[in-house]
Length: 418
Image (cartoon, rainbow, N blue to C red; front, top):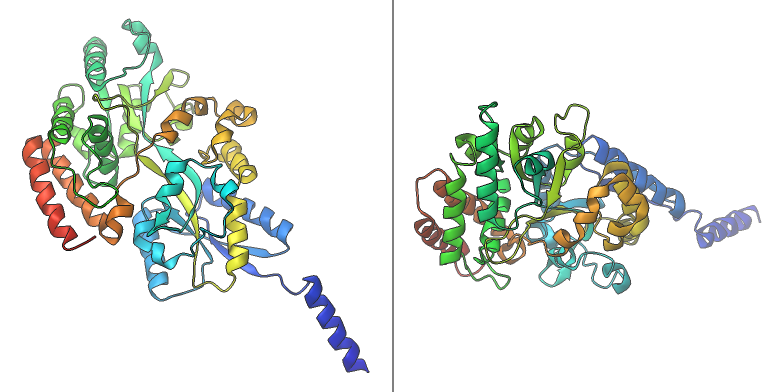
């Protein structure tokens, strides 16, 4: 009789869900603000769902982060249930992620920027959900534009060159190190982002189109690269070809540049106590070369490891973490740019991040890198592209020659198919 009651009690507990709680391990990125906010959000889900969570800390380097993920997935490890994916990773590791196409309601997907949702697809499958985003922006000195007679930011690259030269010449009378425009000119993924913006804005395409066709060898792409090369040693310092994000930000934030191309993260830092230009920074879409303004899409997403043991709970955690409530908290507490479009008009979010008001149109039209089309070969495509762009910026090649050679190089990388 005693055994009967114990069995009944266990059965009742199982039916009530008391023994169904699971632990989900979530990739929260490197230590810092982002990790802490991710951990807090996952713990809020755990409290609501009755489950537990373990946040997983990754290296600071995005390449090292990817390397760890690829090693784990190659071994079909289920140790990490939910992975944080860079926007260019679905083509690299999407085959290891759960297809969320039938798991996430259409109403949920409709809340997010369409372009980001599409970038999270691999072979027609939805392998991640948008979490927070990024896109290139033009930063400018509001005080200097006013000083030199300009009422608004440049709408074209030609206008930027003219304005930057006038301001630079004037400021160099008292500050020899002052420069007109800084950007990410070193041959790395950041240059891929910058140069894709130039080429797309000139009507030169996206290197490889969505069908996988190599499109880079065209006159507008060549013109875009030659135009960018013309900035070096005129409105940009010779050293710009060695700059990444932080080098550009350091020069701009110290008050030694009129314009800067960078990601949204630089805004809050530019308003900090150690910034010499706090309160004097404006934001605008990047200029057009005649084909419309273009901003490369960045950001991070959450995917579910298909080798994990608790798929349903992991999907529920991803839905929660990428939903409006959690994204609002992240925007207010950490200035993470939401992928939920309505939050760019939310009064609480705007009170904390007033510059978000200018980002909605930028993110809506953001241009994805060709990672989905080139799949596992994207890293080689990006490296070859960066090297070709660098050869033009440093004067070793003209735009037309560089894009012709690049097309041939990419054809060899492609082989029979991406």
